[in-house]
Amino acid sequence: MTAQTALQSSWTKRIEPWLLLAPMLIVLATVTAWPLARTAYLSFMHASLDAGDLPRFVGFGNYLALMKDGDWWHAVRNTAFFAATSVTLETLAGVGIALLIDSQIKGRGALRAVMLIPWAIPTVVSAQMWQWMLHDQYGVVNALLIKLGFISHGIAWTAGTGTAMAAIIAVDVWQTTPFMVLLILAGLQIIPRDLYEAAKVDGAPGWARFFYITLPLLWPTLAVAILFRLLDAVRMFDLAYVLSSKSRETATISIYARQQLVDFQDVGYGSAVAMLVFLMISLVAAVYIQLTKIRLISE
Image 1 (cartoon, helix red, strand yellow):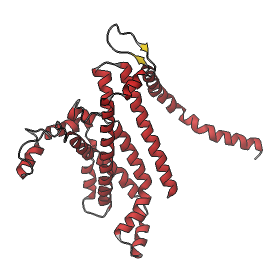
Image 2 (cartoon, one colour):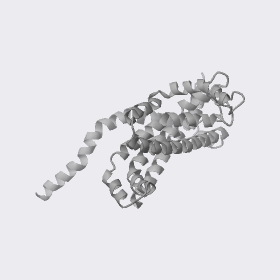
Image 3 (cartoon, rainbow, N blue to C red):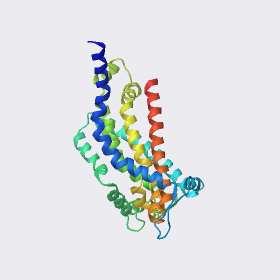
Image 4 (cartoon, rainbow, N blue to C red):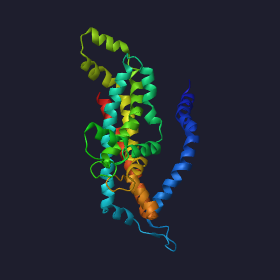
């Protein structure tokens, strides 16, 4: 092979993947890049839907006002708490349930099918269902707790200051844990069984097999599952909106963005909020991916 032929072959290998990805990139640019660019443009404007209010350029004025907005920072704290708590609980529950289903137990096929039901229910339908179940007067949850003697009267779980966020997290864990189980179970089933048999022969206890075989080999799958759930949790809107509507105690950054754009019809300020939501989600993804790569390299 001549040097010219080798150079052409190398160039073809570099350009061919981009040619194959070109149709998808064009579609993404059409449906994503233009709305994002338009939102970024409006975030530097004072613009509203009020008749006669003409847009005008304000530079970083919307962003500076947002940095001083206590409601925005409250929404950021709500989102961070919700994301950290729900993803942690879903990961721990997902690992435990996946290990149980992966073991040789009777009826695990039926258990897998039943387990997916909460995840298959649309979020809005699931939230509305739980809102009825958690109702302080007619909800089955309060009726059961009163009958068992844990409480003496009905509790407004989704309206109380100290219980609303806990109720939202509980519903989210119930709904999305099956997703974590599904991904983690797939990762468990590709781990060679010979490793466990060799460890048993060497006399390794169950906890040692988990920490030195299962967890290291499961980590790549677990990292991807956590990333997917983390991104969903950071941009969560529908669950909190249906369960507690516009409550400040449970408002997330997505709910706050919707409030500015739809309720207040402040397009400029709302666009600035939307851009910060986008940047925060991108930052979370970038930092997590970087930390995950460092962890994988160190192992």
